[in-house]
Length: 153
Image (cartoon, rainbow, N blue to C red; front, side, top):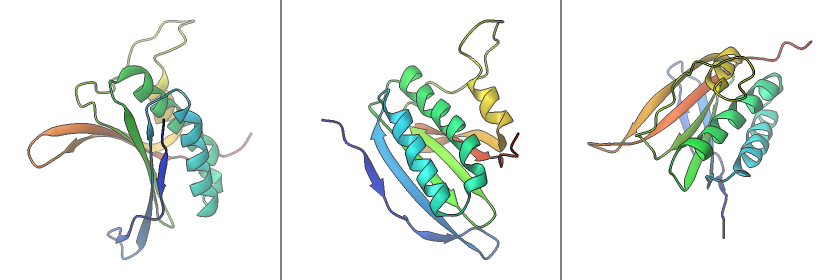
């Protein structure tokens, strides 16, 4: 049996500017269908928090990052976190495979894979990778991005 768990707003926390942020979490199995679930989750959060101009680019990016976890790591589950303030949205995909870190690859014409991180970077204001630690050890990684607003055709 596979389980997807969604938690409501985790907590309100000050974002350093005196404003409050909200964090939404999705925990799901690392399976091929999780990319669709992650897109639906991110879309719902962005629409509910009135960040609709970010939806299209955010869905492309989260889909790619979740697919990367499913294809390239050895984990059973992953988490998607959407942190929202009035001015910013940061979306993170976390997994427990610290050994396999994302890297940009050189691609050839006609090659179908290897362009994901470049795509995420082009659709984001900022992006990066952060290691996840317990008190002494690296226990996973977090690939995050701040989606760029869709400017339309």
